[in-house]
Image (tube, rainbow over all chains, first blue to last red):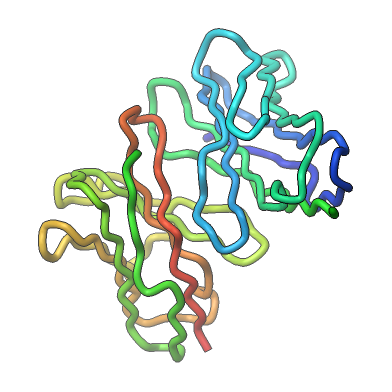
Length: 114
Length: 113
C-alpha cells in the first residue's frame, strides 16, 4: 500500500516570500501525484497533477511541482505567495493503472501574512 | 467541471444517534466516494460506490456505516450509532472526466457530543 508524508505541518510566511512544501511518497510502482488545496470554509480543489511526461508540472494560481522519481518526492512551489494563498495543502498519490482512490498526506497549513 | 453539493453543512448530534449525510451531484454519476477528515489529521478514504453497489471500502467503514442511493440522484452516508470519534469532516467526491481525478464536495462537519 502507498503512503504519503508531508513534513511541514504548519508554515507561516509573509507576502512575496517563496514557498516550498515537501511531499514524499512510498510505493513500489509508478504513481500519479496530486496537490489539492482547501481554502478556509471551502472544498478540496485540485491545484495540479502529474501523470507522466515532464516532471515539472504547472498548476493554477502560479503553483508548480516537481516530480523527482529518485527521491520519491513531489514538492509544491510558488515563487511569491499572496495572502489569498492561506489554506490547507494536501499531497495525494494513486498507483498508475490501479485504484482511483487517492492516499492523502496529513496536510500542511499555510498562513500568509499581508 | 462537475459539481457536487453536500447537506447539511454542519450536523451536531448526541452519541448513539443515527445521522444521514447527503451528497448531490449536479449531473448523473454512477461512481462516487466518501472520505472523512478528523480535525488535524489526513483525509481518509471510507468507501466507493458504483452503480448502486459498494466497490471498495476501507477498514474504517465498519458495520455502523452504510451508503445508499435512495432516489437515483442523492447519495447518502449513514452512521447508525455515532461515537465521539466519528466527529470529523465528511466529504463526498465524484470522478471528473479523467477518472484518476476526483471532484470533492464542500463537506459536512459532524460533531458528536
